[in-house]
Length: 273
Image (spheres, rainbow, N blue to C red):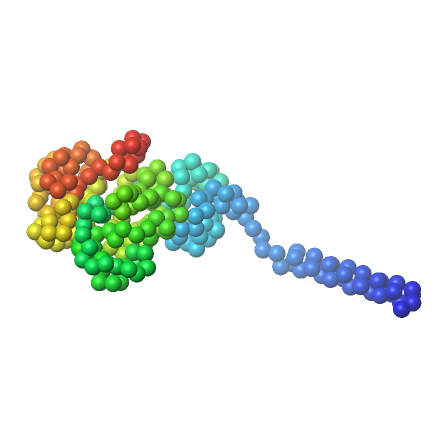
């Protein structure tokens, strides 16, 4: 190839590169999507867990919907108070009051409950529950695997020596992942200011409960009589607390004969809850 041909090839390629570059520049200007400058600021304030508790497809989806006025700021249960204030300032809206919640476990059986058969399958609560409701004698109780711990995006759940999940109130963001994941429906969200929990989910009769679990609710109604605020009632053989009325006085805890109404140790350690 002669020098002239080489120069010509370089000029052609250079011209094509310049032409394509100009085309891309024009296209990027013509077809660019305008991004609200507030979007990045809001996303930086969100927890980034993409838990979906707000009903949106992750934190990006929530931020976009927030800017469009399609969702309220309080829809994000996982955001901490400082970040919530920052987002409110970015949006230029008044911060609405919010009752912080935490997840609690309604079971204290653990290793106190025997096995009705030996389960050798996948160590996952959802899988174990498919096999005759799991291997535990109490069909309502915790199966002892780490499904809830694994789905928690904030590392707020650990497993105790009793093979029971323990929720750390100061880490919990009430995203509801554990509530959704538990096949026995043993988790619920309660106000963080409350400390009394019914650690049982059985709807069997008192006699049947005692036959399989020493710490289950036997529907004796002593808690009902002890409560001065009408905040606890036995419904379908199970004590149920109305947290709109409960003052966490602990009188029900004192009279419960099976000690299934408890104040979790984690709540005692965290006085600010």
